[in-house]
View 1 (cartoon, rainbow, N blue to C red):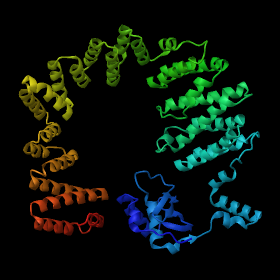
View 2: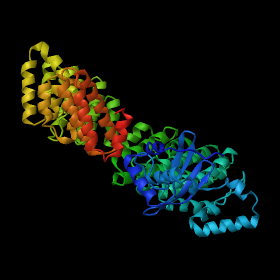
View 3: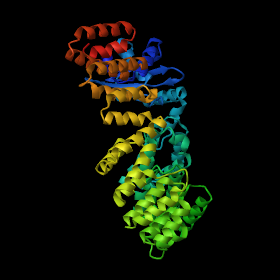
View 4: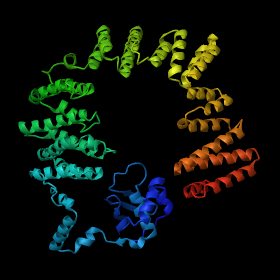
Length: 576
């Protein structure tokens, strides 16, 4: 086939400036070795702190797809892929062109193939897992579970998530084949073994690097497969059935341990819906024991709540089990019991539990108070929040302001809103206060009081928001100088955008400051931002008939930063 074409700008567009620069250094330093092209796919070894294996597939449009065995996951392609593509761009003849594997191996004898495999395993011992992989099973034939056990242990000893996900998925595919042929017993045996291994090995150390959830998604598929087998398998003996259910319960406990990431979903649904009466008589005590353990801090209150929900869900499918209400009253968390009584309109009991347990959880306080509002008892909601607000740590001004706006007098709302704006300012609440106070003739004095309080607190961000809303450009420019540097730039851009019609010269000065700040921060994103601001200055200078001044500024900018090729590139792209 024709040699795929590639351009430098196609490579730079795929990477961040930092990755592209590092990839260039890797290429120049000869990090790429053993480059190979097979059709439109490139791969090689890339030597750095260790050896990584970048890969890329080209198309008529450029790079169709690419990957690398490194853990990079911060946007764009990694430096190893950049180095591979730059090598191909500048030195395509270095790439050894080989035929597809099926053509390469088609004429080799059995002995040749065995010798090739042996040499490959000697060079790369980890390939023994491929050689030892379980064969695709035949329906009705017991899989070699010992091989699955060895393989899945090898999979979880790795530290690269794509490889881990691919290895686990390859094993799960054998279970899928058995399931698709309706060999539920043997498919379930494969799924159960894989899920139990995942329950053992998928911990925080794996979760922290499973950024895209690739491994987690495969585990979900495995749990779903086991659930289907549990539902459809006939002649499943009691011991095996309990082993499957115990594995699903362990998956639920693992999800709780990990904080609720839908690990092995839908394990909890399978436990609730697919257990027989005999299963439940055996399983319910185990769940209760875990709930008791949760009370001894193995799990959080949330974890205990999930176990109680599992118990109530399972009980709802059993005629002889306790009712949901009885279980919540016996074992439920304070949150579950408070909202249970609220639902039953037992307000006195609900509030007593909430006041005793919710005061250090402001989100839960407002959630419960809103539940009282929905139940049609606003007076009780207000009393509850006021009682919780006695804790100095939380004031609930935002909830109180909303409450008085909907359930109180205008005077109560104005007072609550004013206090809230002093500590949690927002333009929308400022506007709401103005709308309520102006008809009462109170706005001028309230505004002065609020401005004084914000000035004393040095809340210049809030004052800046007010100035922008009221189009007080003089005050806005004064407050801009007092803002901390980490937020000044965004307000400077907003101010420049808002005054460019009425005050173009002042806007130009602000945009020039933004350009200088963007260039100083480096990076293509910042250079693009600088080019955008320069376009705006050009338009304003044309409007003011100051084209000569703009050209002089533009030439100065180019001269001062001639050693920043990426900046020059972005400015050229913008048409300068």
